[in-house]
Image (cartoon, rainbow, N blue to C red; front, side, top):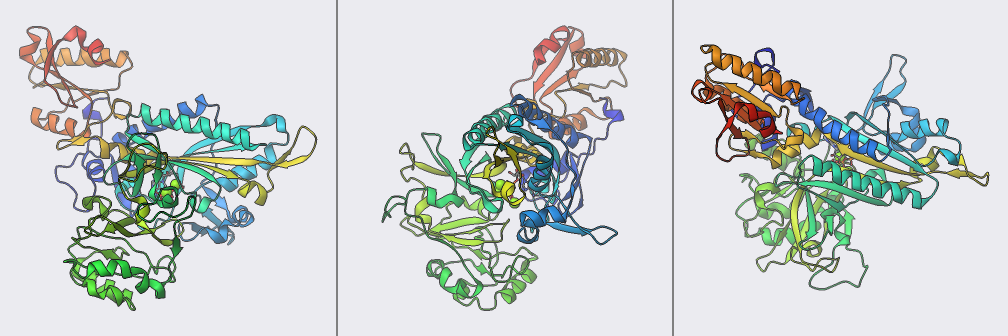
Length: 564
Ligand code: ATP
Ligand code: MG
Ligand code: MG
Ligand code: MG
């Protein structure tokens, strides 16, 4: 690709509405452009990266014998009525009508459509087990689309579904998927962790999430420092308590809180907050369900409109927020609790990004935490004593540590939730009709692009892992438009690299070298080859890796082997 024929639309300034580094850099590197809240256009550079993720995912799905299909994004309501989710799903589901006033929806996930396919296509046990997948646009009307493609409303997902006669067969495919996910994240060069997860609104029994570790992550995960044990802190009951230990297997109390119970629930926090220097904002979640109230602890907020003492007076939460919104221009539906004496479990710089947070008193005893589930709108108070960092780990090895993670994948054993409701079955070997058992497996393809940038950036821009880079190599010629020799050498190198199947960008713009270097570093191309008059005297070019290290002179003829 030649820069002169390409759409390079880099920005010098950091866009003010982008809060996290990946969103800032995706805008600055010209990878995405916003169309409306949570809706983005992927530019040629962004799309190149997205396709790289897709291809790795596709290869690893095919390697475990999953078959690719493509289902419609628009889905008829009657299938969702059959599964019960037309009523259950909540406001993330975008419902639409066709010209005949029939109900449809934009697919946030595809269990119903795949169940419809399977009950028609598969009739015998001989056809099982079967795993199908697609890589496709999903729509979820997220309450707070934010951070660019990290939490978009329209986004790209790989979703796979498997069908089985027995639980053992489901477990086998689940294990294969788990391994395939590990290979995907390893190939993409990401620092990730599989964690025990809650099954959320999708239901089912057994589930893992895959998290890319990053301080901007919206989830908190607890893991052992010396074994593979890791769990989403949403799964607080999976963690061992400290202090007064409940009997083994005793579940930690976790309950929904209704608006009028709020004051009592907040009590443990308000006690500490009496000494707080900062403030609290409260709002009923009118956009979810007015019965429930959401809470988020914010660490770094400058909101002083509502003093901590008001914690107990949350009878009119809406007014309080309105006041705060006016003062700050922040329109998010939070309750925030900020207290310098309450060190947050999560590091305070990231806490404002989270829907989960908690506090400890000065002795380091954890008090309580608040966990709001976006998908269901449920809000629960978690006894944080159970997720204190430094617990022995439940696996018996090492200590528990807490980190923030970005959920990039999620696998579930659904069991018969959908196949019972939608009558998906086959004739078994003995001629009996058997309902199938089912698994589903998602990967946030577009979210991975942002998550990878969270882990791979520096003050100059993105530093792509090899597998994700939009181009492997960039050729930067010095004053090419004045030097025929530079032009000739750069053109030849470009042709040779292309012939080797290397993704190469030839920066043939009439720009000053400084402009070219700045742009290419921002975009994050892993290898840079500078072609200049002086080095050509010795048949050499200058090589620089985006990840740093010294510039090196290399022989022009060794360039290809050097890069590969
Ligand atoms: P989250 O907890 O972040 O809302 P989820 O649990 O609702 O995600 P799943 O239903 O498990 O999401 O979907 C599978 C994957 O799709 C997720 O692991 C995530 O990587 C991705 N994903 C979900 N919602 C979004 C979104 N709004 N924008 C981008 N990717 C998303
Ligand atoms: Mg969600
Ligand atoms: Mg989730
Ligand atoms: Mg999930």
